[in-house]
Length: 161
Image (cartoon, rainbow, N blue to C red; front, side, top):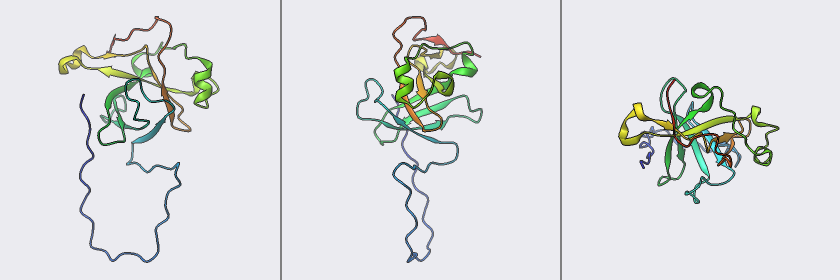
């Protein structure tokens, strides 16, 4: 598993420090570069109990491939795709309690992402996990991976458009 490390900070300019303190963001407000979204996991991803803060970073300009990366420097990083462009008929049976936990009236209000596996680096063999989507409330940026109880959706669905 690869871990994305933050880029070195740019050199600070030699300005005189201000005597007036800059306003600090509220604890719930996270500042991210353009195009990057901060997500708070309602529950840690299975197998990664120490990580609840993630960012969703565009992996390309199309907006159809993302990195779901833990904020912690030693945290995991996953390749993810929005479900709709790749699987337009995908409607998982997410329990209503899971939607309520995320503040969603129903699943139609959510954004769904699927984690992607690229075996041996072969992008033509990439698969998406439809059995455990990451459900995101786009208003609150709360997210949760839901492991579906039924077996209708495969763990390794070919990722082709």
